[in-house]
Image 1 (spheres, helix red, strand yellow):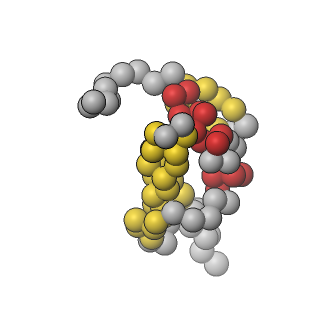
Image 2 (cartoon, rainbow, N blue to C red):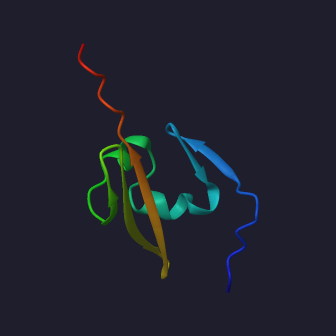
Length: 82
């Protein structure tokens, strides 16, 4: 089955994060239900690591259905010393 990528997401705001409601259950099952839990998540495969950001691929499974997520973490640049 090919996913419908043109479907309008049903957003849910929870614990300082905005989620697509269809992923809420699996993200909660993985312990990724708040900004803090996502920011401090350890594990996954690093796809890209540069000074300003990283992209980490993580996989989760719920009720036999596997899903892959990409966590994109942006790190603010340090201010220049003057």
